[in-house]
Image: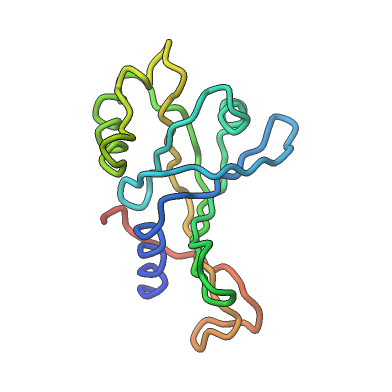
Length: 160
């Protein structure tokens, strides 16, 4: 299904925010919008305070779900990527290189200093590593449609 993989890559490349779904130890769900920087199509980075609800949830339950889509698309015209992933705070020994990657997508005045991402700074760098990619398939799609909108798992490589 190379064309569905192309859709997934296009959605990931074209957007800057993802909806991050987490759950606490009791399983109570929480969704947070976060600005992201992808590294290929398998690793996604964002910054957050370790005190935010989604960061606390990741600390106790690292399995996350992600949706990426253009919220300005007309009704019936949106494309979306759904990701199952495992998330974690990036360890200090990886911060130097990954902060450069993350900052590469930010405009100059918004870039974050490496020291801000380590204690005692108030924010940390987080990574979600994808275990499964799916795309939205319209029910009316002539090739893959099933009468109602659905998700279809796709395989995409980590190359951009």
